[in-house]
Image (cartoon, rainbow, N blue to C red):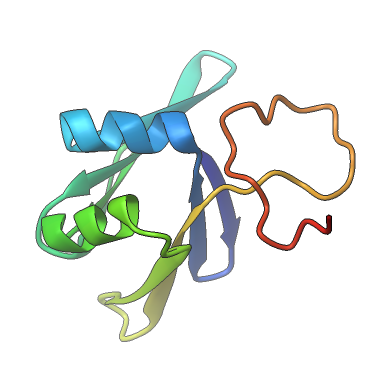
Length: 118
């Protein structure tokens, strides 16, 4: 899973392996170690909300919405979640496509890019 954070938005990109785990276990997680600590990001089925507890961010998405997204050609979905300060957090969850330019990154589990020319 790739996570991009910018201002009040979080973008999650899941590859084929992440989606396989999500289908079987009803949740998928990613951990980034920073020195002696770690950040944890999880997507799981549940009532739509996001929770930040200590070093863990958990995004809850309705099970049917996840299922539809995982089992169809749908690229992604977005959510707007309210914050206590009356701002909103923009969430985008997408399938991770292979890049069109060469990168030093393992993309073996990424989805074929639909804009790839023949």
